[in-house]
Length: 210
Image (tube, rainbow, N blue to C red; front, top):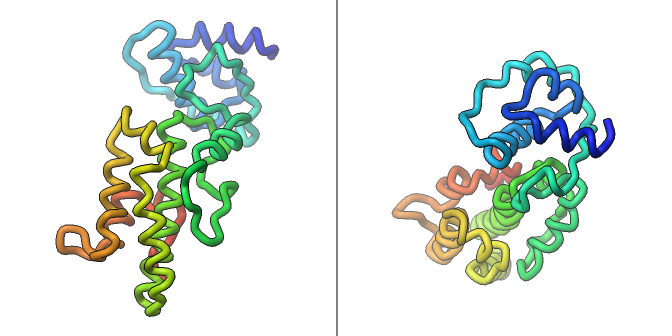
Protein backbone atom coordinates (compact mmCIF):
# COMPACT_ATOMS: atom_id res chain seq x y z
CA UNK A 1 0.00 0.00 0.00
CA UNK A 2 1.11 3.55 -0.64
CA UNK A 3 1.52 6.10 2.16
CA UNK A 4 -1.64 7.86 0.97
CA UNK A 5 -3.61 4.62 1.00
CA UNK A 6 -2.41 3.77 4.50
CA UNK A 7 -3.40 7.20 5.80
CA UNK A 8 -6.84 6.84 4.24
CA UNK A 9 -7.25 3.35 5.68
CA UNK A 10 -6.28 4.48 9.19
CA UNK A 11 -8.56 7.49 9.01
CA UNK A 12 -11.49 5.22 8.21
CA UNK A 13 -10.59 2.54 10.76
CA UNK A 14 -12.56 3.14 13.94
CA UNK A 15 -12.09 0.64 15.47
CA UNK A 16 -9.49 -1.33 13.49
CA UNK A 17 -11.00 -4.24 11.56
CA UNK A 18 -9.73 -7.67 10.58
CA UNK A 19 -9.29 -6.54 7.00
CA UNK A 20 -7.42 -3.37 7.94
CA UNK A 21 -5.07 -5.20 10.29
CA UNK A 22 -4.20 -7.80 7.70
CA UNK A 23 -3.70 -5.23 4.94
CA UNK A 24 -1.27 -3.17 7.01
CA UNK A 25 0.58 -6.19 8.45
CA UNK A 26 0.56 -4.66 11.92
CA UNK A 27 2.76 -5.77 14.79
CA UNK A 28 0.57 -6.48 17.83
CA UNK A 29 1.82 -3.54 19.94
CA UNK A 30 1.56 -1.12 17.04
CA UNK A 31 -1.87 -2.39 16.07
CA UNK A 32 -3.24 -1.75 19.55
CA UNK A 33 -1.77 1.75 19.61
CA UNK A 34 -3.16 2.61 16.17
CA UNK A 35 -6.57 1.27 17.19
CA UNK A 36 -6.61 3.57 20.21
CA UNK A 37 -5.41 6.52 18.13
CA UNK A 38 -8.18 5.93 15.61
CA UNK A 39 -10.76 5.68 18.36
CA UNK A 40 -9.69 8.85 20.18
CA UNK A 41 -8.54 11.21 17.44
CA UNK A 42 -10.76 10.41 14.43
CA UNK A 43 -14.30 9.64 15.59
CA UNK A 44 -14.39 9.04 19.37
CA UNK A 45 -16.48 6.10 20.51
CA UNK A 46 -15.94 3.07 22.77
CA UNK A 47 -13.37 0.51 21.68
CA UNK A 48 -14.60 -2.98 20.93
CA UNK A 49 -12.55 -6.17 21.39
CA UNK A 50 -10.20 -6.89 18.52
CA UNK A 51 -10.62 -10.63 17.75
CA UNK A 52 -8.44 -10.33 14.64
CA UNK A 53 -5.28 -10.23 16.79
CA UNK A 54 -5.35 -13.91 17.69
CA UNK A 55 -5.80 -14.87 14.04
CA UNK A 56 -3.63 -12.34 12.25
CA UNK A 57 -0.75 -11.55 14.61
CA UNK A 58 0.82 -15.03 14.85
CA UNK A 59 1.44 -14.86 11.10
CA UNK A 60 3.02 -11.39 11.22
CA UNK A 61 6.68 -11.32 12.16
CA UNK A 62 7.97 -8.23 10.34
CA UNK A 63 6.71 -4.72 11.00
CA UNK A 64 5.88 -3.18 7.66
CA UNK A 65 3.68 -0.35 8.85
CA UNK A 66 4.44 3.07 7.38
CA UNK A 67 2.48 5.93 8.88
CA UNK A 68 2.89 9.60 8.09
CA UNK A 69 2.97 12.23 10.81
CA UNK A 70 -0.58 13.29 9.97
CA UNK A 71 -1.92 9.87 11.02
CA UNK A 72 -0.54 10.06 14.56
CA UNK A 73 -0.84 12.70 17.28
CA UNK A 74 2.32 14.52 18.43
CA UNK A 75 2.53 12.39 21.60
CA UNK A 76 3.42 9.30 19.55
CA UNK A 77 7.08 8.51 18.86
CA UNK A 78 7.40 6.52 15.66
CA UNK A 79 9.85 3.65 15.28
CA UNK A 80 12.01 5.54 12.81
CA UNK A 81 12.35 8.47 15.22
CA UNK A 82 12.92 6.55 18.46
CA UNK A 83 16.72 6.56 18.34
CA UNK A 84 16.98 10.32 18.05
CA UNK A 85 14.18 10.82 20.57
CA UNK A 86 15.97 8.62 23.10
CA UNK A 87 19.22 10.51 22.53
CA UNK A 88 17.46 13.78 23.32
CA UNK A 89 15.72 12.30 26.35
CA UNK A 90 19.09 11.25 27.78
CA UNK A 91 20.44 14.81 27.69
CA UNK A 92 21.22 16.07 31.18
CA UNK A 93 21.11 12.58 32.72
CA UNK A 94 24.29 11.03 34.20
CA UNK A 95 24.60 7.55 32.72
CA UNK A 96 25.68 4.49 34.71
CA UNK A 97 28.64 2.32 33.71
CA UNK A 98 27.77 -0.04 30.88
CA UNK A 99 24.65 1.81 29.82
CA UNK A 100 23.65 1.15 26.20
CA UNK A 101 20.66 3.03 24.82
CA UNK A 102 20.18 0.36 22.17
CA UNK A 103 19.32 -2.15 24.91
CA UNK A 104 16.37 -0.21 26.33
CA UNK A 105 13.47 -2.63 26.16
CA UNK A 106 10.92 -1.80 23.50
CA UNK A 107 12.92 1.17 22.23
CA UNK A 108 12.26 0.26 18.59
CA UNK A 109 8.47 0.03 18.84
CA UNK A 110 6.00 2.84 18.32
CA UNK A 111 5.54 4.54 21.69
CA UNK A 112 3.59 7.17 23.42
CA UNK A 113 6.22 9.74 24.40
CA UNK A 114 5.42 9.37 28.09
CA UNK A 115 5.86 5.59 27.92
CA UNK A 116 9.17 5.95 26.12
CA UNK A 117 10.31 8.50 28.69
CA UNK A 118 9.50 6.00 31.44
CA UNK A 119 11.51 3.32 29.65
CA UNK A 120 14.52 5.61 29.25
CA UNK A 121 14.54 7.16 32.72
CA UNK A 122 13.50 3.88 34.35
CA UNK A 123 16.34 1.94 32.75
CA UNK A 124 18.91 4.54 33.82
CA UNK A 125 17.54 4.75 37.37
CA UNK A 126 17.37 0.98 37.78
CA UNK A 127 20.97 0.57 36.58
CA UNK A 128 22.21 3.18 39.06
CA UNK A 129 20.23 1.60 41.88
CA UNK A 130 21.56 -1.85 40.94
CA UNK A 131 25.14 -0.50 41.04
CA UNK A 132 24.40 1.18 44.38
CA UNK A 133 22.96 -2.00 45.87
CA UNK A 134 25.91 -4.16 44.80
CA UNK A 135 28.41 -1.54 45.95
CA UNK A 136 26.82 -1.43 49.42
CA UNK A 137 27.09 -5.21 49.66
CA UNK A 138 30.74 -5.11 48.52
CA UNK A 139 31.74 -2.20 50.73
CA UNK A 140 32.57 -0.06 47.68
CA UNK A 141 31.91 3.36 49.21
CA UNK A 142 33.12 5.23 46.14
CA UNK A 143 30.51 3.62 43.92
CA UNK A 144 27.84 4.06 46.59
CA UNK A 145 28.54 7.80 46.67
CA UNK A 146 28.70 8.00 42.87
CA UNK A 147 25.32 6.30 42.42
CA UNK A 148 23.67 8.44 45.10
CA UNK A 149 25.05 11.61 43.53
CA UNK A 150 23.87 10.58 40.07
CA UNK A 151 20.35 9.83 41.27
CA UNK A 152 20.24 12.98 43.41
CA UNK A 153 20.19 14.90 40.13
CA UNK A 154 16.91 13.22 39.07
CA UNK A 155 14.73 16.26 39.90
CA UNK A 156 16.74 18.17 37.27
CA UNK A 157 16.49 15.56 34.51
CA UNK A 158 14.78 17.37 31.61
CA UNK A 159 12.71 14.37 30.56
CA UNK A 160 11.29 13.97 34.07
CA UNK A 161 10.39 17.65 34.19
CA UNK A 162 8.50 17.24 30.92
CA UNK A 163 6.74 14.07 32.09
CA UNK A 164 5.69 15.64 35.41
CA UNK A 165 3.01 17.58 33.54
CA UNK A 166 1.34 14.33 32.47
CA UNK A 167 1.71 11.78 35.24
CA UNK A 168 3.25 10.61 38.51
CA UNK A 169 6.20 8.60 37.18
CA UNK A 170 8.77 11.35 37.89
CA UNK A 171 7.54 11.77 41.45
CA UNK A 172 7.90 8.03 42.12
CA UNK A 173 11.39 7.82 40.61
CA UNK A 174 12.62 10.90 42.46
CA UNK A 175 11.21 9.55 45.72
CA UNK A 176 13.28 6.40 45.35
CA UNK A 177 16.37 8.47 44.50
CA UNK A 178 15.96 10.51 47.67
CA UNK A 179 15.68 7.31 49.73
CA UNK A 180 19.03 5.93 48.56
CA UNK A 181 21.19 7.52 51.29
CA UNK A 182 19.20 5.77 54.03
CA UNK A 183 18.66 2.57 52.00
CA UNK A 184 15.07 1.97 53.06
CA UNK A 185 11.58 2.81 51.86
CA UNK A 186 9.09 3.23 54.70
CA UNK A 187 11.04 0.79 56.80
CA UNK A 188 11.52 -1.81 54.06
CA UNK A 189 14.63 -2.51 51.97
CA UNK A 190 14.68 0.02 49.14
CA UNK A 191 15.57 -2.42 46.35
CA UNK A 192 12.46 -4.56 46.91
CA UNK A 193 10.14 -1.59 46.46
CA UNK A 194 12.15 -0.18 43.56
CA UNK A 195 11.94 -3.47 41.69
CA UNK A 196 8.16 -3.40 41.78
CA UNK A 197 7.64 0.37 41.75
CA UNK A 198 9.89 1.08 38.76
CA UNK A 199 9.61 -2.37 37.22
CA UNK A 200 13.39 -2.79 37.05
CA UNK A 201 13.53 -6.53 36.47
CA UNK A 202 10.14 -7.36 34.96
CA UNK A 203 9.75 -4.22 32.84
CA UNK A 204 13.24 -3.03 31.91
CA UNK A 205 15.30 -6.19 32.34
CA UNK A 206 17.63 -4.68 34.98
CA UNK A 207 18.31 -7.11 37.81
CA UNK A 208 18.79 -5.67 41.29
CA UNK A 209 20.18 -8.97 42.53
CA UNK A 210 23.87 -9.71 42.80
